[in-house]
Length: 283
View 1 (cartoon, rainbow, N blue to C red):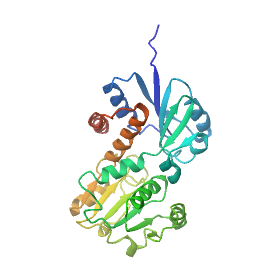
View 2: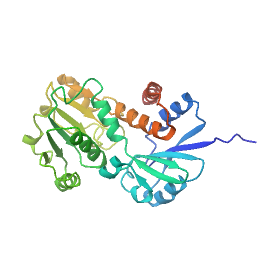
View 3: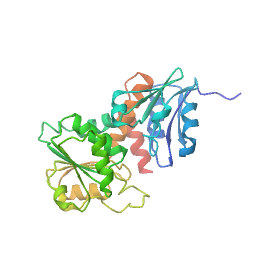
View 4: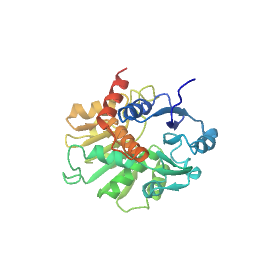
C-alpha cells in the first residue's frame, strides 16, 4: 500500500519548466511540517478551465498562477480580493471547501522588496519608469500609484498597449506613456522597473537589456523582475554605474511567502524559501 499525501498545491502556467516555485514552496511546507506536495501543473490555455475546477477537490489547498494565465483565470474563480479585483490579475488561489478565492500577492512582493533597505518614498523616490505593459507591469504600477509615486512613465514597444494600461489604471494625470525611442521620457527617474522578459535565461532576449545605460544614474534604483539569471544585462549595467540594483528573486520569494500565509494561516519561513531558491538557481 502506498502512502498518500493528504494535500496538494501547485503552480499553473504554460510553459512551467523554468519555475523555481515548486522548490522553495516545498521546502517551506517541509520546514513547517505540513503534509502536502507542491507540483508544477503545466496547463495550456485550452485546459485552464478544467485545471481550475480541479482545485475545488477536497485534497487541494490552492495554487499559484503565472504567465499566461494571471488575467484569463478570473472568470473561473468564485471571489476576488480587493487588490486582485482592482488590478484584474490573480497569482494565488485558495480553495476553501470548494469555493475558490483569487488573490494578488505580486504587489506585496514588489513593495516589500523595494522597501527592504529603507523607505523608497521617504528617501526621495518621486518618479518611476516601468518597462513593459503586461500583467506584471500593471501590478507594479498599481502598487507605486497606491503608495504615492508622484510621476510614472510606462514604456512599451507597442504604444497602444501602454495607453491601454494607463486607461486600466484609471487614466491618472501623473501617468505618462512612451516607447523605447522616447529618450527624453526615459531619463531622470528615481526608480526603473523591468517588467519585460529581456535578459531572462533561455529567453529570446537573454543577452539584451531593455534600457540603455545612459538612462541610469548612480542615484537610480534599478529593479529587474527577471530572477534567472540573478545578474541580468540590466542589473550588470546598474551595478557598473554604482546604482542600487534589485534582482527579481526577492519579489518572487515575498509574493510566494504571502501566498504560503494565505494557504496555511502561518508565518512563512522566508529564509528557508530564499535558501532553497538560491540553491536551485545555482544548479
